[in-house]
Image 1 (spheres, rainbow, N blue to C red):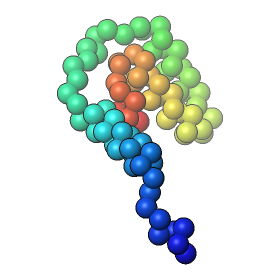
Image 2: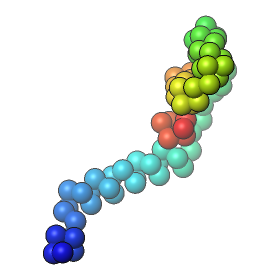
Image 3: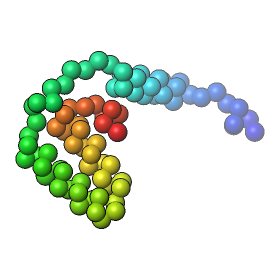
Image 4: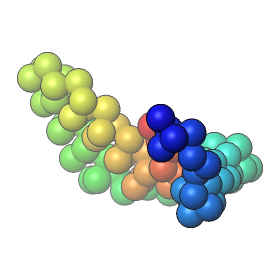
Length: 82
């Protein structure tokens, strides 16, 4: 029972604080991204892959491919792309 009541270690707390700060910055920091600068060939390739995933009924792969498209071609941050 005493192990459950121990205080968290400073390394765990600092890691948690850093992750929360990164997530807050990633989600709420202002960004200016031009949607006019992208590679049409890469977008077409990813779109075809997403169509295959959709018709094969693989939603998790489709979700990952969409997030990958948003990160690569439209330069969205990691958390915003998900």
